[in-house]
Image (tube, rainbow, N blue to C red):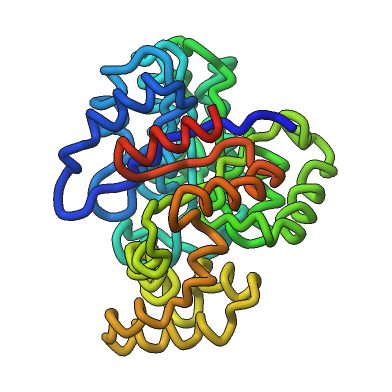
Length: 344
């Protein structure tokens, strides 16, 4: 069994920057964590905090989990990756995700349809930028380069900056089977926001489909599965679950529309269809506290490690036996130390 790596998940900010982030980053590097990750939705961006906090590190990989495709054109994303990879000495991991229609169309003002085709085009262009082998062009319908129409003066260009690495790892966030298969085909890794060691069958099937496609970039032997592993230490399991119920209620109930919510779908596939419907209905009706209370402890335990230390250590075995290669942990320095003790 390969040893699981640990990553620190800083996520995106709430109302303001987390005051303890610099201490967490320093402790993660000291403890031997492999990576530090930031995220974005429609508040703090992923790249600025990663560069700021990452400048105080020398060893850990620096990853985005995730950058939103719709927040930047593919060439702008390639420029940012080129830049940050130089500044951190070749430690960048570029995590990308399509988000959902509410954020894409409501915040970024971009069309959401055909997310798989858009992702394929986007990654192809980013890789062209990073390779710097020839002027960047794209004939696809989503990100045509040069831009058709306009003045007619657009011309293909190569980035001015020479890449430090042409093979910066690209990790895709994916929840549905088709997206997971796409990640296995074109990316270097997969970031499942909700990962359950007890429900790997569907994941494994989708990954195998992607690896088997002609021209697949990786195989199961060298593909990263970077799984978010929420960890709450408390002698009272119900109290530990209470800390995570509001977040699950938000994602199942509010991070998407009733007609299209990929997070909701994940928990339906895990066997929580009735519970997910109840949570969603309560949340969309404005009863957020009731929606959180409707999240069963068993649902939290499927995708998180909660409770006293012995329970967490016992349940950690399932994560070690899963297809995950890295566990992303969020929490206090004490939580980071405990996970380092258990795994490193």
